[in-house]
Image (tube, rainbow over all chains, first blue to last red; front, side, top):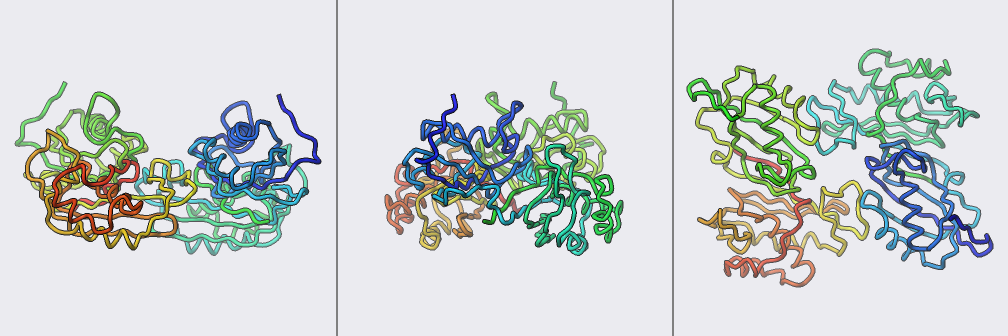
Length: 254
Length: 254
């Protein structure tokens, strides 16, 4: 069923999409549910007539959203990038949008070429839920002091071994050092947003960073505990893994 | 099945809710689908043990949202308003939130006591859809000049017979005069928002006001055509009825 044309005639394309993660079991194709990779692969095949190997910029968990997600794919079909964008928007489901298509160098790889990524985590902080943010933000009813959490979050910044902020995963052993370039917690009315940019992220890293801040807020952890948790290199020292619904892959930098 | 306690022991409560209209066939109970009135009535019965007659501040169409919707209801149960709010938020589905409960004068009626209402209509104006606004805004791909539309919309302001902006409905004949207090079209990035406040609205009035502005934008109608359309008192002279997904009941003033 799968047919890949010979490499010599292939153009390498960078496709940027956004998607509402409520409808998907993450990016990567799996048996148990519909994934973004699967619907994208099907849409592309309907346009160019062949299955192609997609290189996604990262895995995302089930329920996680993407304001910007990048895919590189080598295709034989001569369709111009602008027309491919329009065609993808016709074939993709409403929950996915193609934002841009462009031709890139033959050796460009959406995952390995990535210099940094930015994630955003949204928290609806009120004693009353917001029906419009159901599945789009974490509903957290206890008071959050965004300024306190912003100060605490600065301890994430820098080059650290983030073992304590990674769900153990046999598939992903190796160097656990990541360089967090910036971290910010801001409040806009009842919406509290955590934004983090790093050269890369470990499995569940942002969700554990957020969960640790929530545990600092509730008093289970001290405001200055993040450096100690990092030093321990032990997942059990950090906070909970915050639910996926508040997480957005926001920007991918090449 | 329905049981109403004697009027003498009833307290009159004003309940404010918000809801995501994607999940509902409007406010009013009907055979064909789940409505907000139905889920609210069921939640209330689970708490106070009886069915009560709900007075909603307005009908809303299928798919229309509410940032603020008001209900008055006379109940015999002695539950304090704050506890009723919390209990409603446990029993209501995620797509509805109870924002407030308070006791009001015995003759207060959520619909008849209303001095004015404000509606908001959201348009995602871009050549590419926004997957997060699917069902939450109208996706309109042709350029909209918000300043031009804002100037045209000022012709809606004032006390007019809005017959041209009403879907004919046998159930609602009578005075077609409404006093539009303010109208505004603003752009924030790709999001164009139409806001209108009036002492009352006819059936589909906001959606036809928006559709007429879209027809002005496309050139099918002239920018100065609104006073002429109002004068004709003929629905066929106005623009299309814009889709319900962009419409939000935003505020109810008593």
